[in-house]
Image 1 (tube, rainbow, N blue to C red):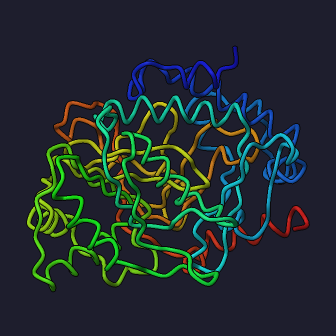
Image 2: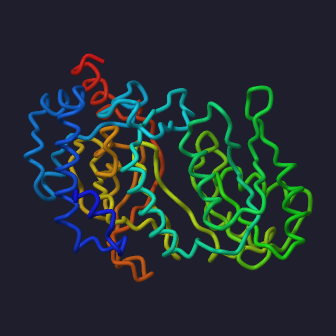
Image 3: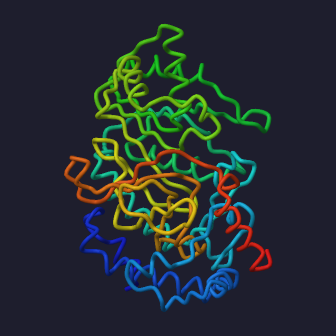
Length: 373
């Protein structure tokens, strides 16, 4: 049995201390695989004088060359042929470029085990059927975005009585239909079945604001929930404080803060970060988070802001075992939360485009040039 398989079979998804050695072994195993099966990745490691044999403990993880997400937006890197990939998913591409990541069957199976353990812990699994309001894209031919696949997957947490989408495809383009969602909410709220909302926080906010403007207020049935994911993307100017969003949801939908759940993740790092009751993203055993200084890119101590470097051995189809995001964040000690989860938690402070971070942009350009891409 591979170390990766053992890691994703871990019963407690937040027991980091007992899985430290296993995580390092799984990362080394994954690094060796990509080194042997992806020529471009091998060139990157060789150019930095790094050998998979160096993967030993925390220092080895810190020394492992990370790949900026910008690299995946400019070039496709694969360690398996397309015939061995069950699916390929893309990022939303709001910057005009999109990453394309491959997933093999075994990696997806690991992901399924992860998701079931985490959402069960957050009490999102339910046998009670619900109506879904998806404040995101309606699945369609040609739409391979991870956020669309994730949103649809969330409608499987409880049996779906109906699915209403805010972004529908018409004449080859997606167009927002918040009026249609509002009409569906009023209709579904009159039934005894829960209503579950899933999607972008931006469109959730736009919907709640529309309800305020129209003077519409409903009370969704007990068991209703709001699940947020995907960030604010191009609507960062309209971004509001979480507390304001929670207050609007309670006022207009009758859904309290305890039934609002937020997710964090990326197609280049397909690990599910699900917030706790205090809305903190505790790090699960399937990943590790390194915060790096914006200028030196050296690891910083917990509590210090920096660039978010995410690591996981989940996927074999694409070398995404260590990626540098364009998020600024802070890693806090788990005990600071108060929810009882001892795992450190990640606080996202904001997003900075890699082109605005000279060191990261230069690093991505150097990688591309170094491997002839």
